[in-house]
Amino acid sequence: MSGEVGRLLSVKFRWQSPPHESDQVESLARQLKVSRLLARLLVQRGLQTPDEASAFLNPRLEDMHDPYLMRDMERVTERIWKARSERQKILIYGDYDVDGITSTAVLKRALEMLGIETDFHLPARLKDGYGLQPEVLRQAKKRGFQLAISVDSGIRAFESCRAAREVGLDLIVTDHHTPDRELPEAYAILNPKRPDCPYPYKELSAVGVVFKLVQALFCKADREQVVHHFLKLAGIGTVADVVPVTGENRIIVKHGMKGLADPRNIGLQELLSGVGVDGEPDLFDIGFRIAPRINAVTRMGGGREVVDLFSLQDRKEASRLVGEMNRKNQQRRQCESQILDEIERRVAKQPDEFQKTFLVVAGQDWHRGVIGIVASRVAERFFRPTLIVSVGDDACQGSGRSIPNFNLVEALDAHSKHFVRHGGHAQAVGCTLELDSVDDPRLTELARSLDEYARRHLTEDDLIPRLDISSYVEPEEVDRGLFDEIQRLAPWGSGNPEPVFASRNIQLAGGPWILKHRHLKFRVQCNGSRLDAIWWKNASAASEIPPQSRVDLAYTMKSDVYQGQEKLMLTVRDIRV
Image: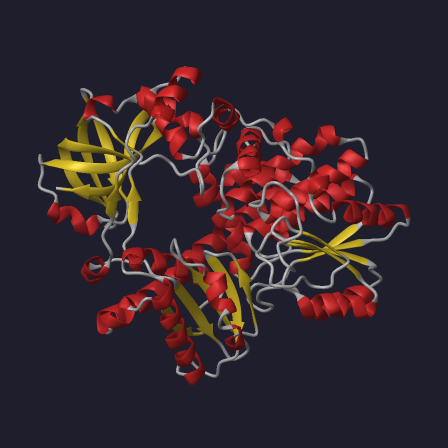
């Protein structure tokens, strides 16, 4: 979203300084033989002993937990082994986001490698909405399936689990979403978040749960040495789902990204090549190049082909599918831009509506494949929990995104009477509603009630976004050595944020210049060198930054390759003249 109105209504960051130096920092730096800065960043992540810090800096596959610690794992593997011995075909019930798609692809490939015949159902994002559908399970039984396994959904699918039980279909639920007070009556449930599950690490993505199932199956088959081949897709799904990159997730992502530097899978090769990734990808590559294209297929009405891509042996067909993914991603961007432009016009007409504590924004026939992205954009801009609703003749769907200190799934739980179905995470939810129009009084009542709920659960202080400054550094310290040192903490993500540094009184040595009418670029003087600095989506601030001025700058560091030359650059997070 752009424009002066948007800028005036956008929130400002409050810089939050790091805590004072502690004895733990000094001790850790001494024992690990690292700099005080690196030790400080480790302590900020709750790593206070040399063993904890060393395990974090050197994540090893052998440090992963025993998959059989997960509740129901033994029961699940025995049932799958029964299907194998009796030649029962297994239906995988997938989900349409990147986490669900990679989960489907990983489980499908693993079962096939074990000699089990499979098929999969990928729900249509635009038609089926969120969650398991009872009729799909009933039809699966009629088609001869005796076992179905859900991925990335099912933990709240009470009706679907009952339907499966009634027709005699064994349904195994694998999920990572927050359960309700009770669990559905499935044959078995793999979910580390279920209250009775002793599994030590609770933050796995859906593909992470599937990876643990695959690990258990191949351990049972005495073929555990091949499990690492599944880390590449597991890493993509884990990054895309924005779960904490800590514990086992960190191991999955670290080793998965290493494997992506030289994949053997033809579909993966063509996907990486088709999005311009050469060598080992970073988090930006996965989050902003790979994941959006996988998502775009289901967002824009596609389906099975995105799972089939990872099973293809025909390079020409794989290349064709990747080209189609790129085309659909461009369509997705256009739809997203149209909705954001409409919201921009509403902001100009009714600015007070966008200062409520909880934002509910509805539109007629907004493309349901992109409302989740729109919710993220609006929540980020106004720093308010946000629900975007698309009202259509056949169905009404919503997608929500939140801010820190506000649990969105609990908020929807408290208003469950308004929804046909809902579920998700503390920070992201999906829902289905019954509405006649965007002016339906039921929607007005829901918006009013959610706003009241948010005002009871959030303070004014909660509505001011923090910019956590990892450390203040002198401009003379900003160089390749500093960048290389902090890379030991990568990969970044939730629970392990990329360090944000701040430098006071830094000299502008060029610019500012506006790029593509949206971004701001300038040069800064650091350690005898001039570094490029980019401030994404802040072109409107150009007039506020006088040339040759001195500024306080908050930024992250990036290594960029241009015309074969690698150079250091800064990504600006905030600036104070």
